Image 1 (cartoon, rainbow, N blue to C red):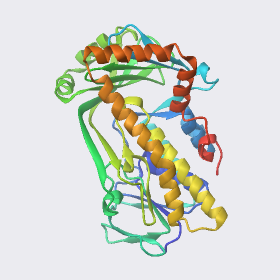
Image 2: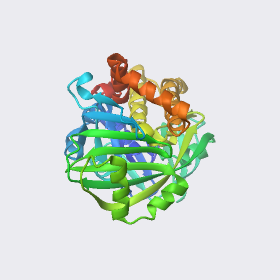
Image 3: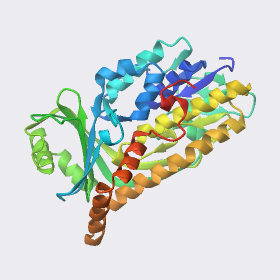
Image 4: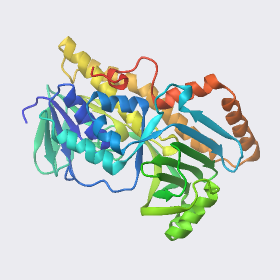
Amino acid sequence: MTGDGILVVGAGLAGLTTALALARCGHRVHLVERRPLDAAVADGRTTAIGAAGQALYAAIGAWEFLAPHAEPILDIRVRDGASRRYLAYDHRSAGDSPMGYIVENHLLHRTLLAQVLAQPLVTQHRGAGVVRLDGQGAVVAVGLDDGTTLRARLLVGADGRDSAVRRCAGIAATRWDYNQTAMVCTLAHARPHDNVAYEWFWPGGPLAVLPMTRRRSSVVWTEQRPTAQALAGLDDREFADALDTRFEGMLGELEITGRRWVFPLSLVQARRRRSARLVLVGDAAQALHPIAGQGFNLALRDVAELAEQLARARRLGLDPGDPELLRRYDAARSVDATALTVATHGLNRLFSNAAVPVRAARQTGLAIVQRSPGLKRMFMRRGMGVGGNLPALLAGRLP
C-alpha cells in the first residue's frame, strides 16, 4: 500500500459505515479488521437509528437494503419506576416521519458488509491488528501484527471501546464502571407493540423495550451486577415472568426467542479524538451508557462530520490529513459528544437514586415536560438528530 487514500481500522458497525460513506463520497478506502470481515455478529443486540441516521444511510445508498429489517419507532413512553404517570413522545409532534428505527445488529452488520464489499473503492485487509503507528510524515504508517505495514494519508480509528488505534496513538481515555449489567433478549408477544418504544427507570437501572419486526421486541434490562447475576440464573420462563411483572402485562403472553445475553456497562471517553493524521469515530472516541439509546447515532454524527470535512478539504485542494482539517473535526464533534456523555451519565445517576425527594423531583420534571409541547418537541428533534446546521449526510445528501 503506497500511501494513497484513507485507512479505516475496524469493521464493526461504525467502521463499515465509515468505509461505505467515504467510498460513496469518492475516497479510496483501505479497511483493516483483525477478525474475518464476514465474522457473524451474534450478540442479540439491536441498534436504534434516529431519523438523521436513516437520512445518512439513504444518502450513501444503503437504506433500501436496510429498510426491510428496520422497524419504525412512532412513539416513546417514559416512566419513572412504578409511577402511573409517563412522558409520551408522539412522532406526529415533529412531523410525519418515524422518530427512528430498530434494526438487529447482525442484520445491520450483514447488510453494511455486503455494501462495502461491493464498493470498488474499498480494499480489505483481514486477519491482522494494529500494533504501531507513525503519522509524523507525509503519510501515516500503520504496522500490523502480521508484519505488514500499510500507509495512508489519513487513519480513522473505528475499532471500538478498546481501540488499538487509540492506544497506539497514545491517546488517554477516561473510564467509569457503572457496576451495572445489561441483560439483552428478544421477546415474541401476544399483543402488538404498535411501534411504541418504552423506557422505565428503576433504581437498579433502565429497562427499555424496543419494537422489532414480526411482533417482537428487543429488551435491554439494566440492573446492578448482583441482581443481574441472579436474574441471569433464571430459566427463560422465569425470566419472561419477571419481565411481565415489570411490563404489567401490557404485551400479553411473552416468549423469549433465541439466547439471552449479558453485558457489563462502563463509560469510555477519549481525552481527544485526533492525533497526527488520525481521527477517532464511534466507540473508539466515546462509548456511552445505553440509557438513551444514542450511542450509535453519535457515531453516525462522527462519520457525517468527517465526510463533511474531507469534502471541504478536497474542494480546497488540501491534504486529507491536514492538521487544521483534523482540528475542525475535533472541535465540531467534541461539544456534541461531551454534552451527550454528560447527559447519559447524569441521567443514569439521577434515575438510579431511590431517595424520596429525588424521586419526587424526577416525577415533577417528567410531568412538566409532558405538559410543555415546545419542550417535548425540542427533546424529540434532538433525539432524532434533525434540525440546525447538519452535515450533508445527516440531511440526506452527499457532501
